[in-house]
Each structure stands twice: as C-alpha cells, then as structure tokens.
Length: 563
Image (cartoon, rainbow, N blue to C red):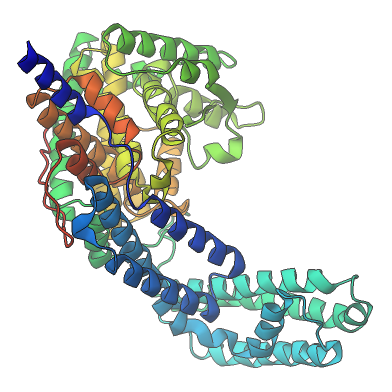
C-alpha cells in the first residue's frame, strides 16, 4: 500500500508544474526595460534607435552570461535558455535592419539639426525658433538637391528604395510630433515655424513617394498580384528555425508538408467517394461549399459548432475547461476591410465572425459565405475557442504570465492545430461533408508550409502562391488572395504560416512520448497550459525533466507523422 501511495505521489509530482523560477524578475525586467526604450526611442528607423538597441541587447547578453546557470532549478534553466535565445533572435533581426538602414541613411543627410530638435523636445527644451526656421528651410533645399542626385543614382533594388522611403516617413512622423508639442503653446515657436514646417512637411511627402519608386525596372516589386512582401532568404530562414528550436531544414519541412498533402488528397477522395463524386474531390468540395447558411445566421451556426465540439471533448474528459472560459467568450463581426486580409473567422478572447456585409459586392458575398460554410468551420471553431486560442489566452494570463515575451506561433498556432489532428483521430467528423471540411483545412496548412517557405526561398511569387491555393487546395480565389496577403503583407513573422502544422506535429509527438510514460491525455493537456508559451522543445524539457546545458541547441527530431 505504501509503495502504491509513494508511486502516486511521485507521478503527481511529475505532472504538476513547478511553482517558481529564479528568473521571473529577470525576465520581467528585460521586458520592462525594452518597453521603456521603445516608448522613448519611438522612431525605429533612425541611427539613434539602432545604436541604442544594439547596446541594449549587448548589455543584456552580458547580464545573462553572468547568471549562475548550473545552480538554477529546471524552470530557471529553461527560462535562462529562453531569455538568451530571445535576446539573440531580436538582436539578429535588429542588425539585419540596421545594415539595411545604413545602406540608405544618406537620404536623411539633411536631418542632423532637426533630429537634435526632436530629441531635445523629449525634455521640453525651448528651441531657438528663428534658427530652427532656417534649418527647416535649409533642409527643404537639401531635399530638392538630393532628389535630383538620386534620379541619376537609383537604389540597387526595391527593397532598398522601400527602406529609404520608410526612413523618411518615420522621420516625418517624429517631426510632426515634436512640432505639435510646441505649436500654439509657444507663441515664438508658432510665429516662426508654421510656414517652414508646412513647406518641409510637404517636401518630405513628395520625397518619400519619389524614393519608393527610385529603383531599376529589373527589380520586381509586384508580380501582378498586388501583394507586396519581403522574402528573407535561406540564411535567415535557417536562423529563424534555430531560434524556434526546429532542427529541420526548410527543404525537409517542405518535403514533410508535401507528404502530408498527398495523404490529405487520398482522404479527400475517400470522402468524395462517400458523397458519390468518386475521385473528383474538387467537385465534392464545391458541394460542401454550397452548404453555407443564409446571411444573418452565421453567428448561430458558430455557436452550434462550439457546443458540439465542447460536448465531444468533455464527454471524453480530454482537458479541463474552466467554467469561466465557457461563460465569458463572446463574438464580434469582422469588418469588410479586415476580411480582405483574413477571409475566415479568427479567435482569441473573442471570436470574430467573417461573413458578408450589406455593402460588399455580390461576388464577394458569395465567396465569403461559401468559404465559411459550417463544414469548413467544423474544424476551426475549437481551434479559435475551446480548447484553442480562447483557452490559451485565458490560461496564459493566469499561469506563469512572465513567460509572455517568449511568444511563438509554434506554441500558439501549433496547439490549436494539434487539436484538429487529435479530434480527427478520435473520429470527431462523422459525415463526409464534415470530413472534407476538416481535410480542407489540414491540406491548407500543408500548403502554407510549402508556399510560404518557397516564397521566402525565392522559389515562388505571391501570384503562384494564390494559384496553388486555388488549384491544389480548392480555395475561392478571393479567399486565396486574402490568405496570401495575410502571409506576406500583414506583418506576420516569416515562419508564422509554417508554425501551424509544424507546431501541431511537435505537440502530437510530445503527447505520444508522454502517453508512453503513463500520462493521460488530460494530464498532458492541462500541464501544457500551465507552463505558458514557449518553443515546444523547451516545453518538452520541462515536462519530461530532461537534462539541459548552458549552450543547449535544438536536437529534438520530433516525428513528422501524425496519421
């Protein structure tokens, strides 16, 4: 009996999250310091900003190196590695941007005196307005001369031109803030500066527009899709994967996605055959798209799907769903403007319903309704609500919230995608329409890995990515365009689209490892959400209590098979 009790206590200790880390205050201080500097040095396209943040990361690298790693607890060691990795990652991308800035910084040669005025404004120093007015006029003349010179010396490509234009736009925004601080409050400043500022501001706008287009025609910015992104190249992809603790090359990830892509196609043909369409899965998919609900009825359809998925999960006791999460989630309607970037509903603290509005074109209305039919949404309601993003946000605000700076889509999106895999394997979809709906999204996540990595490798253009989604996945064209626009032109991280399925595979592999050690699914799921957000390989170290060194590098070759 004593042996049984001891074994139970040992097992409970294994699955219960540790109570604290020695580095909580260190992580919080790092984030607070960064926020303070970002608020103060608000122009992130300036020499001042790049120099200061280069020093910030160098100083914090030293701070972390001085921590006694070997005497930390397991939580402390993981936090040490997470913080060290975060500093390295942010500094790496900062230096890439700094290098690009220095290559075009000469477009702001005229700004030295005015930049000093902007900096001194932070402490409210009274400017010598008569001298400042001359500096503004001189800057305007310098812009004219610089424009004529640059017409004969265009930038090497559109990336450089875009960086130059953004630098001027950022300068103009800082100038506007400083000018408005004094204008009408300081009579002397107001008398001297109104016209010089207006003239310079207008010249800066014209200058910015000129810089945007001052590159050779051999450098292609728009392939005809109207979607403007910025491929980062293979070296940066490799580095980004390492920062996310992914030990696979982009080519290996593409190969995995292609393999899963083919599996999805076979399963879609099975469902298509059930519906009587045989191998013509595209025709079966068109049938499913036509199962959309009438305008005005989408919110109730989403609620019904939510109730169905929660019942399925709770009946099987797969995870703890706190009553407050079920009480407090709510809906909003997505604007037509937002739907151009994300044509499908999204979620988090609330679920944002994507469905036609009255002022949308008839064609766009139909595409939105077909693309958001209940069978397509069948796979994604739990992805956005419970036990997906809504539950993640709920738990992250309550458990080890200091780990929020270690945010990664491989954890956030990977967890939600993992549940799609898990529920499929538990026969959550019953009808062929439901199966096709879930498979549509799974094949879409395969396509995301393929097209986003190939885009950043320079092997696909945005238009080719759109065509892939239409021809090989079955998207409505407008929805495909919105998906690609979201991937490359919305500010998402380069690996964001890769993270869904890759993170899902990581969680699925980790689940299988722990189930083999005697954990239940519920114990695994509950523990994950109490550790907060981090790369999944780091989570694995905590959950399996694995040894870890100060110079730890990614080495977990997680299984890429979830069938």
